[in-house]
Image (tube, rainbow, N blue to C red; front, top):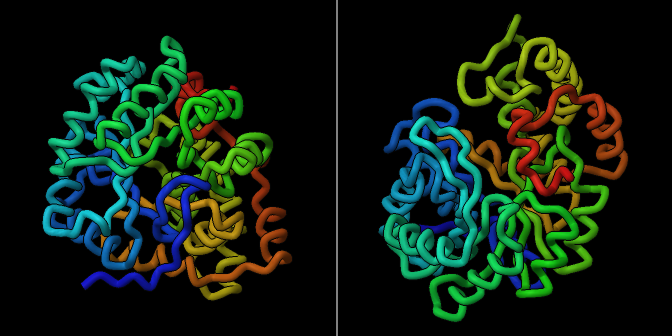
Length: 336
């Protein structure tokens, strides 16, 4: 039986109402190492049972594997209880190498047909290009998705990792429900221009990377010469001396968490939640136990003084290394 005790948030002025915390499914398709399918499905069920509702995936996660997994997990659930957010357009080679973007209108309609089939649904709640395609005007891409809305295949349009100017151009074509973008104590770049623009335009935020891919947790702390052997090994902030310096910041955060009797990850999530009711964190845990621990952060209140102490203890400018490998940083319209 679904438990809908979790508080809710509305994504922007025109988007759907979802749980205060959403579930990000990417990690279930090998990005951070192998995942057990039965446990993966159990985790998705735990998210739905907690009232999360919002399940985020991408057609390129595991080259379709993620959508098929999510499809199996939701097959016996009432469709109206689920808000499916799907990213499209990213081109990946068989070796998981980045091949660029394709968001031409014809490609958009092709991609959505595959997503609907793999997920086993008649419509997608939110459909968004994974990145800005430099070869296709954002107006053309948004226009193509708006046609899918008219045809009943999509309910809302979202964007991902775009800057303020692109947000304005897109919103002039069709209302945008939300912007999916990285936001955490270690990645606060959206606060300068992007977040204010979203609020001006009535666009919600679905924040991914709120734990900075596990860095803002206890998973790597206390390990001498800590290293990662999964996809994070290619990210500068996880490499060598960068990682050691960043973990010192995490140690400071852990001290503040201990004072409140909570985990480091819970404090990092609670901080993102405290930044506004229009910001919905996406949590990508891979076990029901970790999910339960994560969503407990929604019950944690931070006073203005505590928020200031956290920001002072973990200043974003002290983080060393970019949030993606340098070649991929150039693909982010949000970083220009």
